Length: 141
Image 1 (cartoon, rainbow, N blue to C red):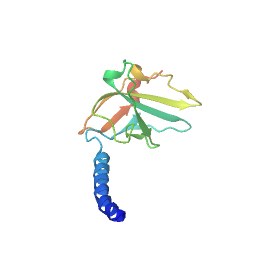
Image 2: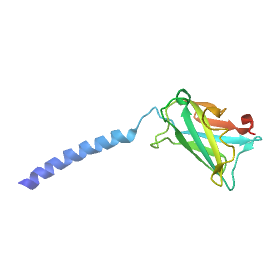
Image 3: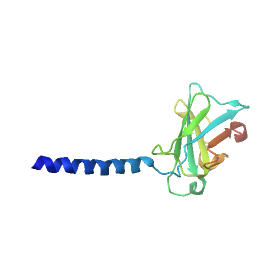
Image 4: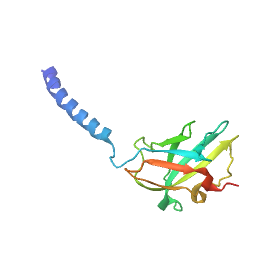
C-alpha cells in the first residue's frame, strides 16, 4: 500500500520540481552579457608576460561605500566578456571601466586606470552590448 502512494506522489513531485528548475534557470531577462575589445594605436591590445584585470562599476556607485563590480575575462586577442557575478550578465546602465596591467604583482599603470581615475565610461544596453576601449585616450604616464 505504501508503494502505491509513493508512485502517485512521485510524478507530481517531479513535475513541481521540474517547473521550479525551469523558472530558476530562466534567470533575469534584463541582464546583459556584454563583450568588448581593447585597442592601442588602432590595433588590438594584447599582453605578454602580464595579466590584465578589467572591472566595470556602475557610474552612480563609484564614490559610494556600496561595493558592486563586475569582472571581465580578458582574452589574448584583445577582447573580453563580462558575464557578471553569477554568469547571468550585468544590468543595463552606465559603467566606469577600470583596468590593471599586472606584471610581477604590480600594476604597470600605477592605478591610473582604476576607479574614479579611469577615463573610460561606457553604456551597456540590449542594443549596445559591445564595449570599445581605446587606450590612446588614457594619456598614461
